[in-house]
Length: 160
Figure: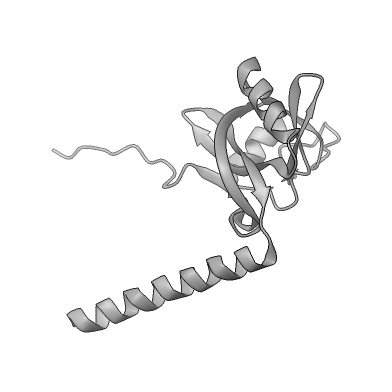
């Protein structure tokens, strides 16, 4: 007798903002829901999303995701005029929005999306309060990363 395993995606991550860790110091993370249309959910299941130039706008006590690109599928959006970069509402608790607004009003802070991922059957957006890095910070981070990589190589060669 053999047991059947449920086939599912290997990763829950849909899209990552890889540039964010290089450009910003991440101070605090939040998990937000995302208000989507049907064709967008189908496109996200196919992994057709980008967060490259996306950011979070806080207006009238609400949070909005701007600049996120969800490419429409030809089969899913035949009867709807699909706007791939439309503004999407982020679903957060009022206390979280108030906290983010308070931090963003301080000098140097901003709010950006880090990742889109599946949590059970819902799409979640990980957003973060960040502070911009200076050029020397970026260089120091890169130097540290290179040194850690070199250290790993040395350790591997020593064990062989």
